[in-house]
Length: 240
Ligand SMILES: [Zn+2]
Image 1 (cartoon, rainbow, N blue to C red):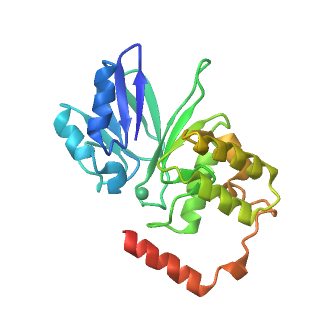
Image 2 (cartoon, rainbow, N blue to C red):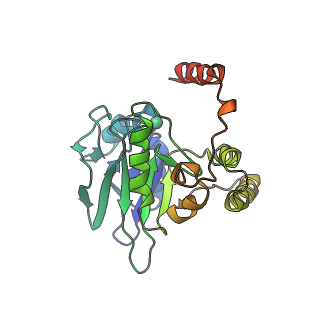
Image 3 (spheres, rainbow, N blue to C red):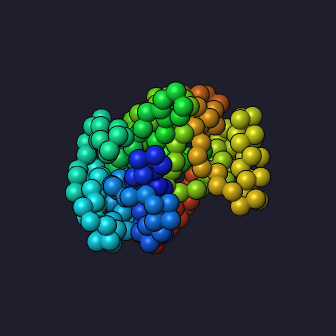
């Protein structure tokens, strides 16, 4: 969950507010009015709070790119710009994790970097699971995100950073940037600090899924046995 606020105009937008009480508590304390919800995808750990928050806040617009999103009021499509108060948010359709997954990009200005909410498509050091798309879909989606301005700060749906970086290192063992990032991340986690956000420019240095054109990224195929694939599939089935 994230809250984006305009502290001058006193309005806010919630991103995937799966626990509405927490979101509304913060907004109330800051005397900020919630205007809209933007939803990255229909999974319940992202959209599962939409119904309740729309009951708690009157006239709330709920944006998303998939009919399966709870309490959706505005369906968006690729490249569409939505306007909430004085804020322009560009919708980027990034299918694969789910077929209707949307990332939300807000351009920067002289005082602020651009930002993007990437849901379960792009994580720090990794990408989301392929539930409703192919590897080709994911690559096309990641291509869209990797061409955003390199100083774009992105906020992902989960913090799988440490494990992702360990995987990154396993497929590109000599990447100095991965080692450096791993060190920074371990330090942050030790202090109980978030590893989010990262920037697109940083990801291009170590995220293997954005570096498939580099021949230093190699999948060690001997580690991917049929048993290993089956084990992963079984685990996915158990979880969903
Ligand atoms: Zn998901």
